[in-house]
Length: 303
Image (cartoon, rainbow, N blue to C red):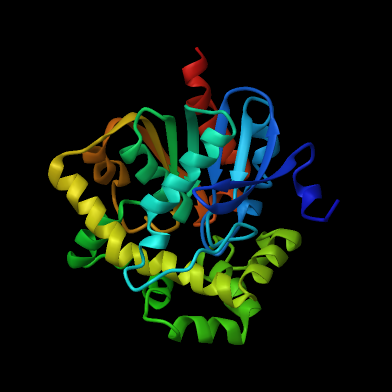
């Protein structure tokens, strides 16, 4: 057992091939399936403070997205589609099929929330309930930026620059880069709020050139592929049919927006949500509040 294993008591490790890509996942608990999808610069380890509590009610599946953590890093070409949210959503759908789950609920944070959003749009019959943490759709970011909103997402602009500029700079000091993300975006403005074992996992990931490149491709795809997909769905009036809960940090990515639910309303047939006192990294900064808000929503389908 590794020190990271100890953060997930009672969970097992699985490595499965999904659409030709090896996907690593932690699985634990009993009950209906609940998929947890992490953000940047993290791995599945970001869920360690909420997964054990959720596992009392659900079978929790917490994978590493392609290119992240212990999952495979497929090669990418100039169109960046290998790391689009649609491609990642297809991975996750294939993973859940391989595990025997045709329908499941999803909670996603940051990049993982974007994957969950895309999955719910592309495969509406598979997602039963969806929790989105501290994001709005990529097309809405573009629209609101034109109106003067900044969102504090300069790291996304940096990561989406052409290779090898961001890759080479990150590789010079992966530890400082990772820690700086938490110093900038947590409520405490400190990386100390992150468990040292989880932090070590994030730093180790970005000490490997293939993973640094893969995670940069994730952001390049956002600006070149995901944005177009979102705009096409918005123009077509496509909506998420399952119940959606949007939770945002009081000092996070959406702090500038007066009413995030109003931004999400055109996308969702059944929408609820509200703020959580936290910085951007809600699952690690305020897990108790997250569980208090999300658990009743996720369990509502059992009634």
